Amino acid sequence: MDKMYGGIDLHANNSVIVIVDNADQVVYQKRLPNDLGTILGQLAPYQAALQGLVVESTYNWYWLVDGLMEDKYVVHLANPAAIQHYAGLKYTDDHSDSRWLAHLLRLGILPTGYIYPKAERAVRDLLRKRSQLVQQKTSNLLSAQAVVTRHTGTTLKGQTLKTLTVAEVQELLPTTEVALAVTSTLTVLRCVDEQIATLEQAIKARVALRPTFKHVLTIAGVGQTLALTIMLEAGEIHRFPTVGQWASYCRCVGSTKLSNGKRKGRGNTKNGNKYLAWAFVEAANHAVRYYPPIRRFYDRKVSQTKRVVAIKAVAHKLARACYYVLRDQVPFEIDKAFT
Image 1 (tube, rainbow, N blue to C red):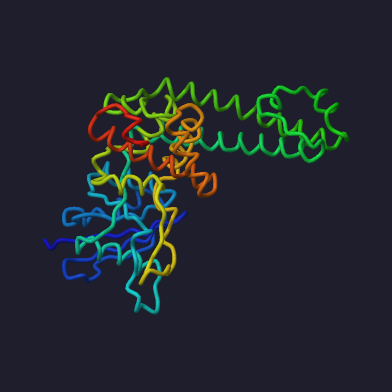
Image 2: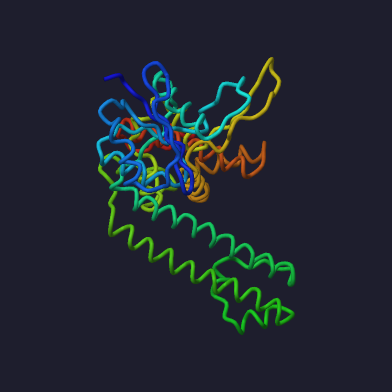
């Protein structure tokens, strides 16, 4: 039987499947509802000949990729940001997109993403939810601080603001309406705090730092939660051949296109893992406060550029150090990273 290759263009409620043979001729194409049983039934006659199936990495790929792999298909997760159609095409649709995925697989030039192990995916997503709530907490705190500053001319520290009672807020602010705006924000903030604590308790009960990641805790600014985030987002460090690829995946490098010394545009700066980017920025903010060599590096950067750029430079240093800590299984050495 001839070798065959399949491409699946996954949407919210349907999937377009195209199968091509070794001569790149379409032998099957159809739009199917997002029902695993239906899709497996349609693929069954071709299973023995299929060398692989490509699923585009969209927000809803878990159920399809897991189901296909459990049914013994070889599945590839395509990286859509790295895939480009032939520029001369005048018309494309879902069927041509699926065929293109199969075509790239047949040629062996398909840019793929990482299929994260199913067993740890749920805990990783729980950590991602915690990260989202932490950002909401910060947003609410800054909002309340801004209202107080706008109406009183003074800035309260976050810890002080969070402990204010309703009566104290009403006494501090000039009108009932303004006080209500702040108290409602503080109520939401406290609720988010409770949910963060609940998630942290659940995460610690479900996962522990693997031995290969124990040295991550020696990195400046990295505590238990950030170490778990790095572990669950990184997967296996050996999938990154170079430190540059790791730093890029952590969104710690710029993306600029130059020609003859002139800027010709920017690449996609959002390529990579936003949760690792967040983790290293959090570590950088902590490290700047408590580690003098890192503070000196940060101060030099601040004197030359904006604060946010300086923090990103520290995050970049920490991400690069993390790569070598994981690859070589050695503790973090601050003098090597920040000289």
